[in-house]
Image (cartoon, rainbow, N blue to C red; front, side, top):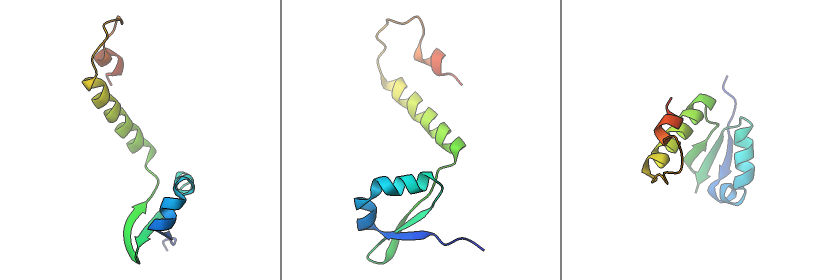
Length: 81
């Protein structure tokens, strides 16, 4: 049997967003409703998925930056998987 998911209003999610994130980080999934209709589900990210997304984001950001030329290595050499 699946556990019940906590439901909160969009207004409460906005007012207490830091608390919502702490609860999700501890493993809880939360359904957000607006005017009685479900609009979002916030749930913990899988650790492996989170690392992969962060790595891709970092590489994209670094790829758009200009090198200052003061290093003896390139961004590509540093961040190659």
